[in-house]
Image (cartoon, rainbow over all chains, first blue to last red; front, side, top):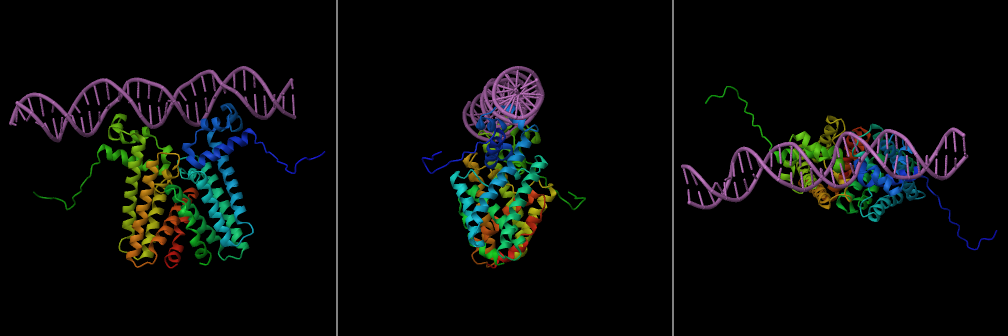
Length: 195
Length: 195
DNA sequence: TAAATTTTACCGACCAGTCGGTCTATTATA
DNA sequence: TATAATAGACCGACTGGTCGGTAAAATTTA
């Protein structure tokens, strides 16, 4: 069989369940739990309501929970790529750039994929809050391991500290429509790593 | 005129407009913009819908905007009391305790009074986002002046840094239902002040 | 100062539209 | 020919918002 061109493109076609989660993940990032309506999800995916309740019999809460995990995995992968094979300083700086790029590309609609839902914790399904917490823990452990492998002392404390900083700067950058709150955190990476 | 007891209690009675703002401020802190319904506000205040639209002709967005400012003022006062007349280290530590107490007293429903609304910035009325940004700026300037008066160098940068940390830890503590993410920030106050 | 007028505050029925969710029928797949 | 998946009509509750109207202050006028 001849191949007239050197480019082979593999197209991964998401099934309905995956597309529902994918779109929901986008929406909760922008508008949180209460701002995300299943009717809008259905409209964007282009499937009727019955499909949603076939794949998610428990309804909205089940869908949102899956979307939290999905968004968490997605983001971890992006951070992983930014960190891989670099010094701690450079890797963390590039990780900040990932967040900055997402804000700019979305005209400041896409903040932390989890935070908008997590803000409503306490007033929504407890399992959704637990999902958010698990994602945060996963990110933090990942960063902790990364720092440890680079010989950083007290990696756990520092990973915790860095995550608080990033999360806060993410919120402030979005609220101010100004990425400086994130990018200026680069100044403090060294301070924290050497503390 | 005789005063049989030495205690005089002044009771300030809020008018309808103020009560609407006050209750809305409570609600947006827990559930954000989309999670706060005017019908629930009306139920809690005990007034009919017409009253709301008399005081806030532009409706929900106007009410939320006022509640953002109101909540911001309120919180600044609490922080001010925690900081007043103390060293920078002690003041900031006590400021963290204010946040910790609010989380504990509300069973982790009350996070930052502004953040839950700010998370939806980009998808809601731009004037509301601006209100959030103004409150954040106000808090930060306040802290900057406080640090300056205590001879802290680069007070602006440090106030920015401290606010990112606090805001992030606030989010994480709420998501994890664990105040440690906030209280452990006390470890880093000194590091930042001396950086 | 009394009467006339305007302004402010409040009330609640009602509107169209949307919410999350249920149900049954049809189609595709194995 | 079962089973999985898709389809969409339908439901009651709830959403933010509009409307015509009442009652009492505050202000103006006589």
